[in-house]
Length: 162
Image: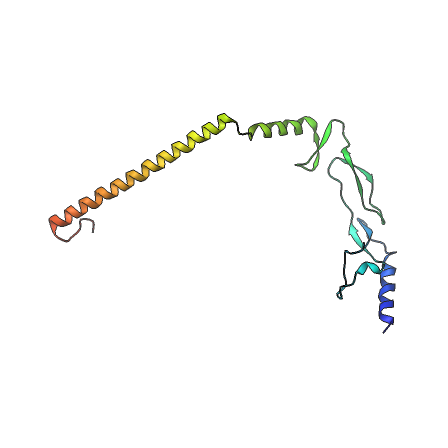
């Protein structure tokens, strides 16, 4: 009965010296991250697992390459001069492109008083058109119904639109 926990501890301890295939590194399991079926913390047994190495964004310097024991460490700056990291493309782009696009976006989406006035005029025009159309259809319906009733009274009970 005491042999099963000892074997589990030995197996997990043995994996701490494990090696991973290329593109992966040995990750030490921190406390509180994984739990056993009985609810106990798995990190009390020294254990590891293989995790895929991180990949730096396009154009960003690599400080340390991935090894068996450490993940990739990426820099914060771009390799090329006059390039900046662009959050939209997640890559390094020429500074003039990023600044030009940012300036264009802030200018085009900014609601000025003149743009609000134009939007109000357009909305009022559409509302007037829809209201006029609705009233015209209603008047046409009423006129047709009045004529239909007159026609029925003249010819008896037979409607004209059969």
